[in-house]
Length: 234
Image (tube, rainbow, N blue to C red):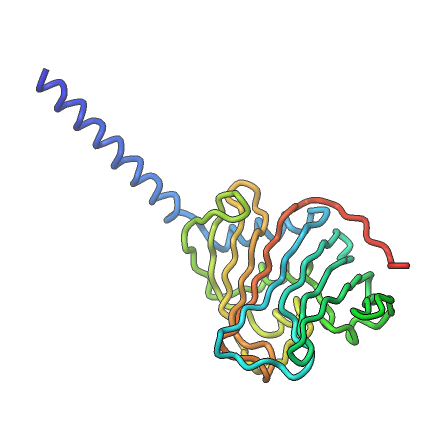
């Protein structure tokens, strides 16, 4: 009986160690570049998604004198049209601004009168955003990539990949970027293991001369491959 129990325990230990080795080997065998290529192809096919774009400032950061965006929440469809609510501060006072983007035209809702005004994309309070095509561009252009393992994002198992993204590519995502302030942004990307969809992108570094160098931005995606009809506000 003692011998049988010892054999059983030994086999169980070998099984556990073998399972751990297999898990470690899976991560070790992941090619981050292949994961990025698959994600780029998959993101080009989806119908749209919900997003939360947030600017994270250190406690030591000084408040901006003009409009400062803290958070954007909204939806984007395959055409790149967007509807969103922007939480910001203006000279330290909190304001909420509605924005609808249809092609090169942005509709901005006045936070006081609630009336909508159409402006060129470059003249909108958030500049010309491209969270859909811009995210794909980051997948295609990120350099110095490294595989960091897997995490849980959006309730799914996700590959965690790090790298660096040039300021021109970040500017393609969020237009309000001063080139040369941070020439190469440290970037973290989480991509679904089973579906190759992007669930989060974090970008660290100051985007403008007025920003604290410790600021970082996150783009969290959900409701992936969901179409939303977006029309000009009336």
